[in-house]
Image (cartoon, rainbow, N blue to C red):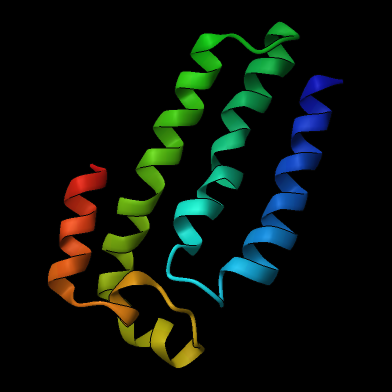
Length: 107
């Protein structure tokens, strides 16, 4: 039941908060929206153990803090595509230097 609830929360957060709101309105889209991608390890943990323990929180944190530098690095490669699509990824609204600094700080 916990795993199902977390799945619903992650799905709703991804669709309504990240995709429909954050993605096209803020360069912090991936920072906040990364929570949706970090919940699945907790879902797996809850499905296997029936609860949430500290290791599940660690897994959430690892994925959550890994997500921004990962996507910023990718977005440096396809910056023009994001710009054409109107998605304000960090490299689109900031300099390459600022983006690489953010990648370094998050890593």
